[in-house]
Image (cartoon, rainbow, N blue to C red):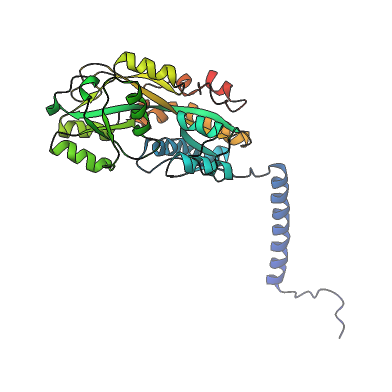
Length: 333
């Protein structure tokens, strides 16, 4: 029999199903219209290559990423960090495009831009651009109070232990030895800081040097536990070093930063800067800078050595690397 129309007893369930299909169709069309009117913002990701996991550089990168991600709900820009073995790995990652931002000390920025056999790729990397200055790492010499060392001249002939990190204190001490009349011995054999610290605390006869930002919490605990004192450089020596090395600056470790430090101590330091490739997406660069400046109090609280920083302190000031174009306004508002 040929069916010629809808029977009067057409099941109610079928009629309900047809109505539901129609409603769903209208709803889908409505969603499609809304989607067309308000397109979703594409997610963007940035990677910061830092330093060893216990380093100031790693802490800086972590703090920046946290601030970026706190705003990600609005910006759809997300940040992650990766640790590294130091400047050589960071520069190589930047060349290969495996990191959007890297953290470098001033001396390594100069070497990378000019080209250095120390790097995996020794050719000049002239596309590096400064994004933000983080802080200064100071040459810091520690000795036991048992040694009766009152000033840097008293270190003449003594052994100062350092690690073999090419980004660390060893290179600075060699510069100091080159300018100082009171030469000392730089020992790179006992390189583990934890072991150095234990020797320093146990026999009182050791002296160590590190490069760090102040106030350093670990260093503060060590000075308290082992009754250590910091040894500053002579001001004339710091001026000679800065005059001959453009990446260095005269710095002061403020009095009472650590135990047994009643007065300001003169030393030298080098800046630590967040840098990028000149071809990096401006959206990522501006987001990183604005995330830090817009949440400056959070940023300063994340690192004890930044507690007194202001916005202009974060603006790159070096004369050996160009600033990423277009970000000056972020620091001047």
